[in-house]
Length: 412
Image (tube, rainbow, N blue to C red; front, side, top):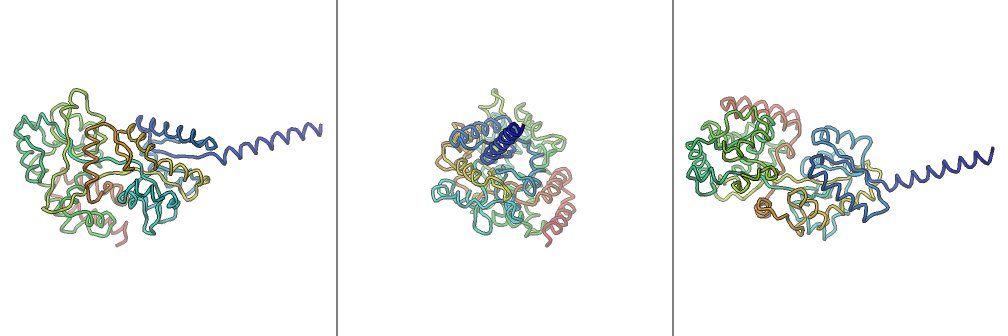
C-alpha cells in the first residue's frame, strides 16, 4: 500500500513538474485582432514564432476591439498576460506613467532602431528616453474619391489647396452628387476632419499641445479650424443625413455613385466592390497655409510587455521577432497595410504605394484624435464635433463644454 501511495505521489510530482515546465515556456498574448484578415495574419505569425522557438508555446487570446479597450487596464493591473497589443504615442504613455508597461529598450538594437526609423521609434519612446513597445503596422488617411464622378462634374485635377477643394465640391454638388460623405453616427469619423484641419491650419506642434491638454479648446486657433470646417458644413457639402449613418453605411454611397469623396483611413480600400475599384482614387487632404510642412494622420499599432508579465524573457523574444523585416512584411501583406520596418516590402497595391510615399515624406505623424488625447475627453469632444456638423451655430457652447472637460481631466 505504501509503495502504491509512493508511486501515486511520484506521478503527481512528475505531473506538477511537467506543468511547471510547460508554464515556464508559455507565452500569453492578448490581441485585438478579431477581424478575419488580422486574425489570420497573427495566427500565422504565432505559428512561425513557435516553429523558430520550439521551447515556447504561445496562447493567443483574441478579442474584439471594443471589449479589448475596456479590459486592457484590468489586465495590466491584475492577472497580466505577457504581451498586449496596443497603440503608440500618448495612448502608450498613459500606461507607461503609472508603471504598467515594461521597458523594452534592449530590443532596440542599433539595427532595429535604424530599420524602424526615428519617427516610429520616437512614438514608442517615453519621457525617460526608453522604449516601451514595438510598432509593426500603420496606414495613411486621406480623401478617397470617385474619379468618374469628378470627371462628370468637370473636376479634372485632384485638389491641392483648400480653395481648390471648395471649388471641386461646388461643381460636384451642382452635378447632383453629394460632394462629401461621412458617417458621424460612429463619432470617430468626425475626428479625422478635426485632426486634419488642425494639422493643416495650425501645424503639428500646436496639434500635439492641444492633444496633451496644454491648450484651451476656446483658443482662437481652434475656433479658426472650425470656421474652415464650417465652410463645408454651411454650404451643404457633407451628406445631409450623416448623423444617422455608420461609417460602413456611409461608404456605400460612394459605391452607389451618390457621393464622390470620403476622408477615411486606408482600411476602406479592402471594401471597394470590384465594379467600382478602378474608379476609386486617393489624394492627401489639401494644403491650407503656404509653407506649412506636411503632417499626416497615420495610426500605428504596436505590441508591448506588461510590467506584471510572468514570462518577460520570451515576451522580449516575441517583440524582437515582430520587429524583423521578414515578419513585418508577411504580416502587413496579409493586413494590406504598411510595415513600419523600412526594409520590408510593401504589398503590390496602388493605394498602399501612394500611402507609403505620402507618409515617408511627412514631417510628422499624428496618431488620431482618440489615440493622441485622453480617452474620456475624446469621447465627449467627438460628440461635440458631431453636434457642430448638425448645428454649427452652437460652436461656442460646444467648445465651452469641451474646455470644461479638458480642465477637469488635465487639471489645468
